[in-house]
Image 1 (tube, rainbow, N blue to C red):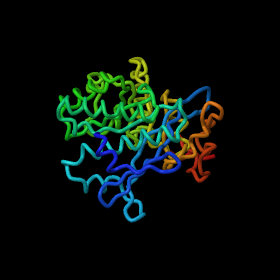
Image 2: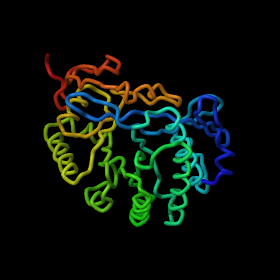
Image 3: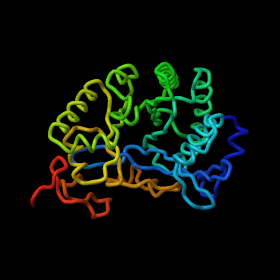
Image 4: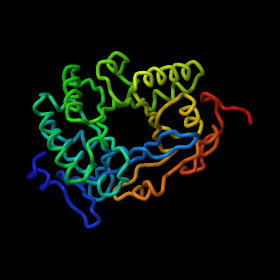
Amino acid sequence: MSRSIEHAHIVRHDDGTVSGVWGIYTLQSAFQPIFAFSNGKLSVTAFEGLIRPFRDGEPQSPVSFFNTCPTVDRLHIEALTRTLHLLNAGACLPQEASIFINFDPSVFTDRSIADKALRDMRLVLYEAEIDANRVVCEVTEQKSASQETLYNFVEALRANGFRIAVDDYGADESDINRIKELRPDIVKFDAHWIKQLMESGAGFALLTAMVASFEQQGIRTVFEGIEQGWQLELAEKSGASMVQGFALARPELAPTSFHVFGKDRPMPVTVPDAGEAPAAVSPSLRPKRAFGRKVVP
């Protein structure tokens, strides 16, 4: 992303955070914590950057925003959103936490385009005072991206020293062979797919086996969309490395309150029983379940 584009579309605020302007939209960063299991408790280990568009002060769907953007602008918009997330992460997140940033591989149709975008990203990291090894680049296996485009882009990420996560595993075209080809550091399991597998004993056994297989390959796993206490308990039992979802913490717009949860003040959450609400959650959870079926108390 060139400095001229950055200056034209980024607004800096007195608190150190930034927002973006694209046409009639104002763009803000939101961050959602990702928790790691450790001795029966959960601690924040990372944050995912999420774009939040506003129009005339009213929140808009990110999907509707991106759908209104011409294809020719997509590369610049992707760069703008990453820049917002990284600058805001440097301003308001704990310095030791990893930062998950989303990429659309389909816009990087040529290796030179990817290399330039990643060089520009490293300049933003320098400005934000963020080490490259804190950044996890999420890529989604999309129909619009050919296998060759996807593989070339992942190799460009790896060559620039970034960690790689495959997002939405288990959805659409995702399969174990592609994971073997991409060799990611992290696999994020699709939320809807996880929920379906947790609804039966056979599904949960499959989920557990897949997690174990990835761990044996040195691939860490993230379960997304954890919204209930019983899902959190099953995620721990399955051996998942990390979890993310509303049952733990909702995304917050920058500047977030998350900066206080650094080394001096960790953000532990005790893993609850199946029907018990975790510490950081609204108590309005569903009744106790076993593999998705209600259990008589």
